Length: 320
Image (cartoon, rainbow, N blue to C red; front, top):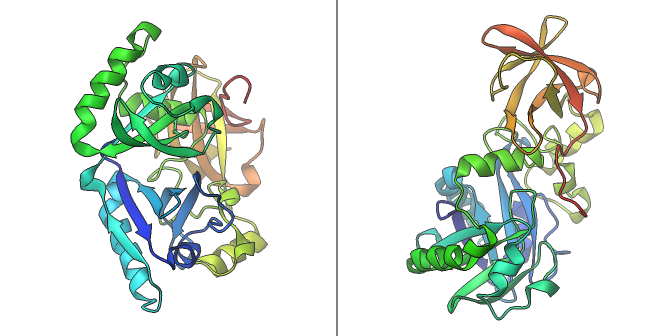
């Protein structure tokens, strides 16, 4: 249940130029009925939030992080006010929008029993407006678990009905409800950034290895000049993946990272990964100590515990 997430509709004839200026990704190249990750940045390049944007035939549907919802909406509306010449509307529809994520290798088969939409022909990151259990639903083949799956948006009063119906329909396939803690473990195994960890106002997208979500060729956008300088000088810090090679506890966000007794960064996310059977994490460290195979010490309860930098993502679903 992702009903805590925020949803914003951007509409009007000038919605595209507004979004092109507002976020780092290229919205002009996004085809209708598809979606894309985007970043909301400050003029200095720091990250306000990571967004997910669906392009619909008549509007743009923007998903924001729950903890940032009010700040994001205020920022979006304030930036819109800077261009009174643009005919664009920014509407927070969170309170009327429900959101569920159905994730896993059997997600398509389960959901197909409840919708007339042809899910087999729906590519990853594309979406379709249809119904699920007779409820009008925006179905996106998206998710934040590293597995195949769908995110569903619908009238919030239908949340309990859809939750119950989907669980009952999927029970023969082993469908189970999970909480955000499990989702957090899954996204880390897939090396998916989480705001407040890999991204903050003090961490820019290039440091967080999200340069693919920053398009410098599309024209001006908020934070472009600052991020261009970072790119040209190369980021001073890099986000790296690591696995623990010594017993001593699980790495946690905020733990110091050292090399030869010198602090070189900090853990942004860490846990014991049940899929892999080992303790893993992401850390933001000085560029000069970053590199696959290089050692790190994670300071756990005041003691250095050995770790090794590894290739990421830690887990990738078969056939991807």
